[in-house]
Length: 482
Image 1 (tube, one colour):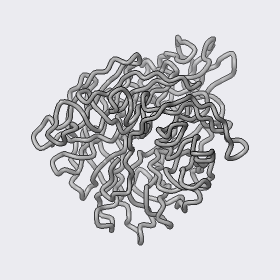
Image 2 (cartoon, rainbow, N blue to C red; image 1 turned 30 degrees about the horizontal axis):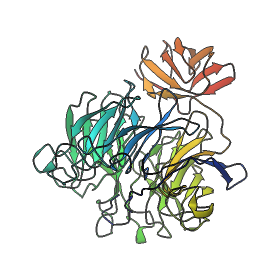
Image 3 (cartoon, helix red, strand yellow; image 1 turned 180 degrees about the vertical axis):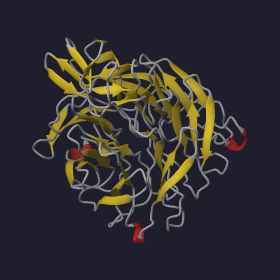
C-alpha cells in the first residue's frame, strides 16, 4: 500500500501452513469476536481493503493481496460459517495484487480491480492494473487493462474498488496516471467500454485510493490521500464531489486547521448516514496525530467528531458502516488496549466513541492484527479481515457480534416503479409479504434472496419482509425515483 506521505505500510506476502480457527474471545461482555479463518499462503495472504461483500446467494466474497497458486493474490468465497473456497488465483496477465474488495453487479457477477497486472507494462514491469468481472462460480474476465493510452492518461494502479451507479455503469479511481500523474476518476460499462472522467491536478486532490460513494443526490463523493490546499508540504488530501459526467468540486482540503487538528491523509471511503451527512476517517492528524473520525455535510462543512489517541486505536483507513442501530462502526489499523494490534470501534453520529474490540488479545495475535474495513451481514453480525496475525501470520477473516438482529438489504437502493429489486436476507423462506414503505409488492424468492417489483404508489422509505420468523426491515431507506 502506498501514500504520498509514506505513512501507509506495505502488505507483504507471508507463506506458512494453515489451520481453521474457531476461537471466541470478548472485549466487552456483549461483543463477541470469532476468528473464522486463518489464511495460510496457499489460499492467500494479507486480505486488504473493504474485502468482504455479501452476494445474493448469501455467501461472502473477497480478495487477498498476495498468496495463492502464483503468489499474486486470490478471489475467495466464504460461507457465513467460515468455509473458504478459492475461486481464482491471479496470474499477472489477468491482474495481480488487488488492494480492495468486490461489488456485485445487477447482472449477478462480481466486479473489482487489481493494482498491478494486465496486458500493459509501460508504467511498471508488474503491469498497470486491471478492471475485472468474475462469476460467483469463478470465471474471470478482464474488462480493461490500464495504461492503454500514451503516458497512462487513462490512469494506472487502481487502489480503489468499484461502485455500480444508478445508471448501470461502474465508477472508480486510479491512484496514479492521468493527464497530470496524480490519479483519475473513470467510468466503465459492464461491457468494458472505458471513459476517463477526470484527471486530478494536485490542487483539487491527488492519489485517490478509496472507493467512491453515490449519494442520494445522485452524485459521486470521495477522498484523496494527498493534494489540496492544506498546509502540509505534500498535500494532506481532500474530499470531493463529482457528477456522473466528471464535473468535480473540491468540498474540503484537510489540514486547513492549525497543526492539522482536522486530520490529514484521507484514504477511506465516505459513508452517507441516515441523517444525510457523510462520515469518514483520516489516517493521521487530529489533536493527537493519530487520525480522526469526521462528519461533512453535502455542502462541505466539516466537523471533527473524534481524535484517536492510541489507547483507543490509531491510523484508520476504515470506511465506516452504519449499523442497524444507527451507530457507525469502523476499525483502526494500530494500537488499542493490546499493543499495536488495532481495534474495532463504534461511534454515535454525535461523536461518542467506544472501543468494541482490541486485536492481539490472544497469544501471538492468533485473533489477528491490523484490521481492515468491516461490513454488516444481513444476519446482523459484522465480518472483516485482518492483514496479519492468525495461526500463520497471514491474516484472518473474523465475525463480530454486537447483539444486533437480522435485517434485509436492497440491491440497488433506489429504483423506479416497476423496477426489479433484489432483497438480500437470512432465512427468508416462507416470506408472506414484501412492502415498500407500506405498499405491498409482488415478489418471488429463496432462503437468501427475494426479487420484488417496486409497486405502483410506492414512496421512499423502508422495505419490510414478513417471514415466519418475524418482520425484517431494510438497513437503509429505498428511494423511489420518478
